[in-house]
Length: 225
Ligand SMILES: Nc1ncnc2c1ncn2[C@@H]1O[C@H](COP(=O)(O)OP(=O)(O)OP(=O)(O)O)[C@@H](O)[C@H]1O
Image 1 (cartoon, rainbow, N blue to C red):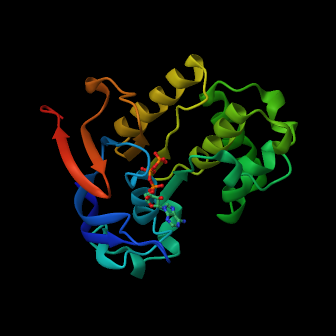
Image 2 (image 1 turned 120 degrees about the horizontal axis):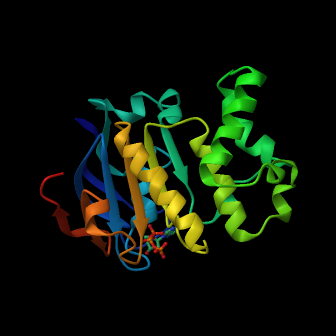
C-alpha cells in the first residue's frame, strides 16, 4: 500500500545556483526496503529531508497516506524517524538514557513504560546497559550513531529514513542494523536507506533508486517483492 508519494518534486537550497532535486516522482509503499544510491552531492540527503517534511519543495507535493504532508505537520512527524548522516547533529541530551527517552517523553508515555522501551531498544541494538549512564559527548562516533538510531527506534516510527547508517560501524553492528531493517519490513513498515556503496545484497531490498545530479537516473524494482 502506498505510504508516501513524491509528485514532481523540485528543490533548491536558498542561495544555490542549481536545483538539488529535479522533477522527482516516486512512490514508497509499506513493508518495503528502499535503497537510495548515488555519488556525493547527488541529492540523497535532500530527498530524505523532503520525505520527512523537514524542508519544503519549491515545486511539487509530498503526499503522505493520501493527503499533502504539509497539511499534516507537525503531528505527522511522529511517524517519521530520520537518522542523520552525522550523529553529532542529533544528540542534544546530556546522557544516553535521556537521549533515547526524549521523544517518548514528548509523546507522554509514563516513566516505567519509557524505561522498558529504552532497555528493549538498546538490547535490540546489542548495546550494553552501562552505556545508558554515559554522557553523549563522550561517546565514540560509532556509538553516537547507534545511540541516535536507538533514540529513533524507541518510538517505533512507521517510516525509517537512514542516511548512510553503516559508515564508521563495525561489522557486528552492521548486521544488527540490517536485522532491525528487515524486522521493520516484516512489521509492515517502510525503510528508506541512503548510501554510496552497494551496501545491500539484492535479496535484502525491494527497490534501488539511483540519483545523480538531483535526478533519478535509474530505478530497479526487484521481482517477487
Ligand atoms: N545547506 C545547503 N545549502 C546549499 N546547498 C546545499 C546545502 N546542502 C546541500 N547542498 C547541495 O545540494 C546538493 C545535494 O546535496 P545532498 O547533501 O542532498 O547530496 P548527497 O547525495 O546526500 O551527498 P553525500 O553523499 O555527499 O552526502 C549538493 O550539490 C550540495 O552541495
